[in-house]
Length: 459
Image 1 (cartoon, rainbow, N blue to C red):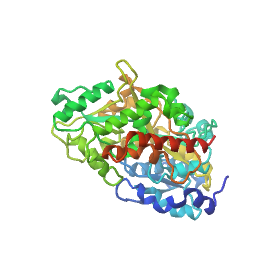
Image 2 (cartoon, one colour; image 1 turned 90 degrees about the horizontal axis):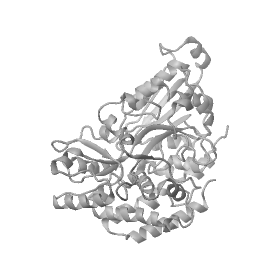
Image 3 (cartoon, helix red, strand yellow; image 1 turned 120 degrees about the vertical axis):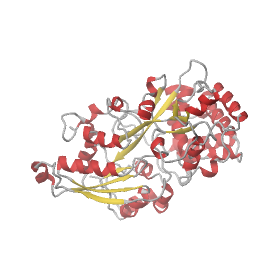
Image 4 (tube, rainbow, N blue to C red; image 1 turned 135 degrees about the vertical axis):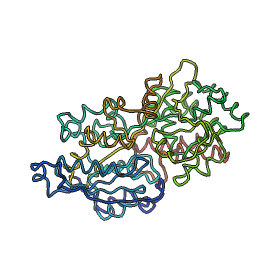
């Protein structure tokens, strides 16, 4: 087992550990509980085998809530006899950071990439995440099925789970969500507007919206441009361009495909509700989402969690959720919806790695999948969409309605002070909307950052 020293942790995480509060996605609501090993459903054999073992599980609390995690932890204990000390919080980095600095690591962490604190990215760059490839060949606790046979195709073949390109899996795929452009279907129907199938149709709709006194676009935060931009790269250049771009190939940002991506984002900025940048932060992002509910913007990039996240928010009369893939470049072209998913992983310094792997395997059990789904969190397992209803049935059928799936991420690179994918590629969108930078200045920044990333890519 690779142990992580305090010195190593501080070197990798650095000042980010002191500023993890920036990763807030709402107010703090931390909880830390233990699942009893004496659960009535636990077999005596399992209890006697593992009664002395307790694993620590830390999970980010999102719009799905924290109760589902306690239920899954209890079910795992009942099945295996392994106790679970569970910690959930909306600001998880802030909660587990101090103890990790002292060398006390959770055995399992559920924390996706793409957050402001970039804690998961820092662990990836520091090679501080345990190899969990063998979990794919494990039998799911309580079942006869093998983990790898239950996970849907493609989810363990991307840079989001295999960040080093070495054929090994380090992060387990969790809670997948087709991403796209969300809108008020009732408002479009009321005005006789059709959902754009091409970008030319999108610009025409933007002009019509402006004439009607509203805006074409908004976004919660610039972090939401990851899924948007990934899908856009597929739209403009297909999988081959996406692969080259996300591996920082020299000259890739000078290609016509890249220019199309830049031009579309820059033009979209001119159609964006101007209040958006001021609210595009992890504290006020729901106010930008509210713009769509209030018909003050037509489209926003988001994921299927938006329904639960805004469930209690007021909305315009006749509001009805709609979701569409990114438009094609031309009529008959490919439209793409990025499939975003969260990740669970094991720090290489965890004390109970074997038991932690059992817990991860259990996350794909029928029992766990049903508990997660009841809270709106959909595991990437085969056949699960068949059991969905309502809005989720609509959202998860997007790939049955002509859209293609886009998956993948920028390749991992060793830590570069002041250089992150989000800050280099996506954060400048705020400045494009406000007019404080030009498209070319954005492109120049992307090129400079990409050169550094290429020089530091983790092979």
